[in-house]
Image (cartoon, rainbow, N blue to C red; front, side, top):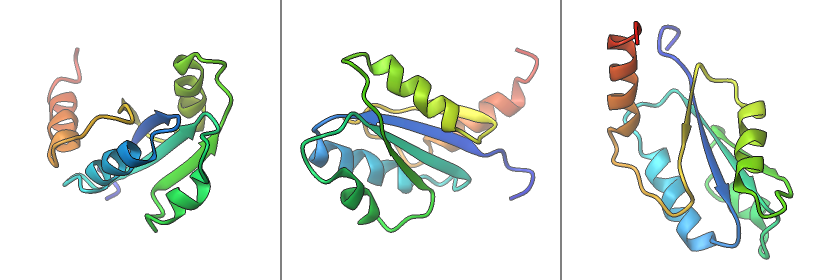
Amino acid sequence: MDNIPLVSVIVTTYNRKYLLSKTINSILNQAYKNFELIVVDNFSNYDFLSHIKSFNDQRIRPYQNINDGIIAKNRNFGIKKAKGSYIAFCDDDDLWYPEKLTVCSKFINENTDL
């Protein structure tokens, strides 16, 4: 996987455990496997860290950060933690088709002059 760029997927969340679970599963089921999943929680009212650990996937990197009601703060926090060549955002109530990252990566690679 040395020549396949790492994609940093950033998900921000707050108090949506059930929806977040579905979102995380849709990301983990990507055909494109070279990604890290950065989940930034605004201190939800459940045990967020235990919930993330239950997925048992080393690609998931959980963080908690107070965003004062401004989601962009936690997106920016996630960007600072990212290690990937590319960054993708996914909301905590969105689902991705399994080919999402494959299609996006292919497009970027074929259009590097954009």
